[in-house]
Length: 139
Ligand SMILES: CC(C)(COP(=O)(O)OP(=O)(O)OC[C@H]1O[C@@H](n2cnc3c(N)ncnc32)[C@H](O)[C@@H]1OP(=O)(O)O)[C@@H](O)C(=O)NCCC(=O)NCCS
Image 1 (cartoon, rainbow, N blue to C red):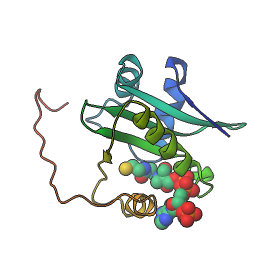
Image 2 (image 1 turned 60 degrees about the horizontal axis):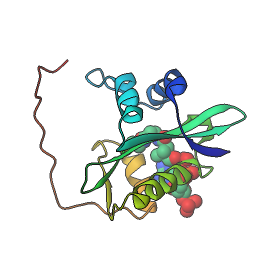
Image 3 (image 1 turned 180 degrees about the horizontal axis):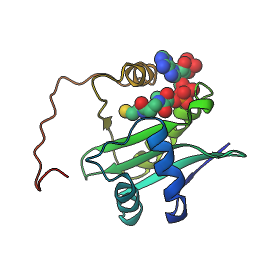
């Protein structure tokens, strides 16, 4: 397995993966998120590739203050083999190289599995709430 930054050609496979593991939502355009992450200088998407194609992916970016991780996913039949941990290590290294000293992420409250995973990865639950407002009508 190898981990590389992905390219536009990987869009269909990655969006299918995000959908397969339940990360997509009707109000998020995952394909547009993928393209935007590749287009800008402050974000990218890493993919884990084996002889079975793309088996995992993660979006990473920074806002000038903190690093952020989104859409971490490993194909269901490839989970529990260290792919998720390897993708997180790649994302963290990318952020470190850009001067970020902290990385954070959001987990949906009902995603107990992911919470256990991040706990195992050394991520602490922050004493904050996330507040959001749509700037355009919700799709
Ligand atoms: C979360 C996810 C990316 C983990 O990927 P993975 O490749 O299975 O994880 P790894 O094999 O790298 O596991 C790393 C460590 O976390 C632990 N871990 C993995 N899944 C776990 C779980 N469900 N509960 C508890 N620990 C877990 C592993 O035991 C391992 O610990 P170890 O180092 O002591 O062996 C994967 O389950 C997934 O794609 N889930 C669906 C999408 C999702 O919810 N993503 C998160 C969005 S916020």
